[in-house]
Amino acid sequence: MKLPFRSRPAGLVGLIALAFTSMISLPAQDARPLPDGVIAHRDLPYVVDGHERQVLDLYLPESAEGPVPLFVWIHGGAWRAGNKDGVPPLRQGFVGQGYAVASLNYRLSQHATFPAQIEDCKAAIRWLRAHAADYGIDPDHVAVGGSSAGGHLAALVGTSGDVTAFDVGAHLDESSRVQAVVDYFGPTDFTQMDAHALPDSPIVHDDPASPESVLIGGAIQDPANYEKVQAANSITYVTSDDPPFLIIHGDADPVVAHHQSELLHAALGKLELPSHFVTVEGGGHGRGFPGDKLVPIVSAFLDLHLRGKTTAATEWPTAMTSSVPAGPIEPPPARANNNAAANNNNNNAGNRSGPPTWAQLTERSDRNHDGKISREEFPGPDRLFGRLDADGDGFLTEAEHNQATDRLRRRN
Image 1: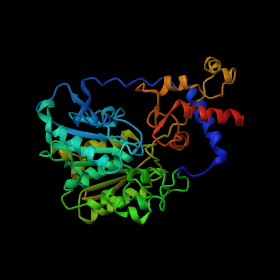
Image 2: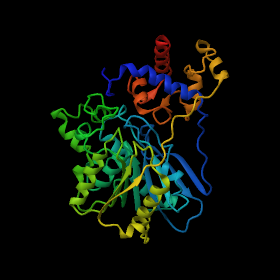
Image 3: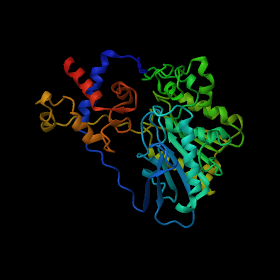
Image 4: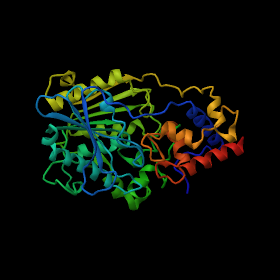
């Protein structure tokens, strides 16, 4: 099967060598400890007897006066990888600011095609509202956010509040509408992704094996799949009663073109809906995003729309664009002078630049100890992961790792 990644055969071995060399020196990735004052409720099933992915984690402030507003986070990963463990709003201190933060898993594209993913997101929001009293959540003040594929789903939650077809399962007496959306570089119109992609884009989105095509169950440019593509586009559902949006996107994003967010911002503007579009100048696909500049913008946005506070966002015009410069983009970690790691690999004894064994890689990167490496756990670039993940299921296995390292050794 032809992979949806732009062909650079001569560079593949080099990419493998570079990434694997870096992996040897990576420290073990332990689960992040909870910030002080945070209570965690993990792996809560939001669908009874559902798929193993239909669970969420909920983080609450230890002390709160009355019900607290809720910020729901949806992870990225091209709809075929990733998990709920990252939780940027938790790391950014939103629980300490008096918010509940929920982070949810959803069925990936290898489990079910669209609209399963948006159905899961809405089911999770309805579940949270149904159990709001149990956890001290204010069900009338809920925001949703996400990045990349998660940004796509967050935007779709925001614009499809009146689309009953996506509300399936339990708690249908609860609403899946939200009061605010934070969309980090989410795709919108799949059919325009390649036309506006940067020259260094690693993905051919029009390919039948692309993440977008796999999501809908067919090539996105096939006329037979037109309705499926439109159904997955948040712009399709924009109406005058949609919530305010905060959209953040890097203008040097090689994976999801900046133009995708321009389309959404323009569609919201046509109906005079509140939309603040922040461009990270020089920012990539989530890389170089300066937290010291962006987190205060998100805080002002949420405090206004979920708490009714007077903030900097109070003065924003209905349709607003702004920009912040990208922060430093960290280079790959330097290779350690690690004789022990090299000597542990019989095929690379004394070769400090050789690839790590599978045991070394899983020790450092397999955070949930399931014997596989997901895209979120993988320490290399998206392009490399896509090439190593031979069956496209969103996980790197021992067999796939061994195939890649064997190829590298034969080349050397």
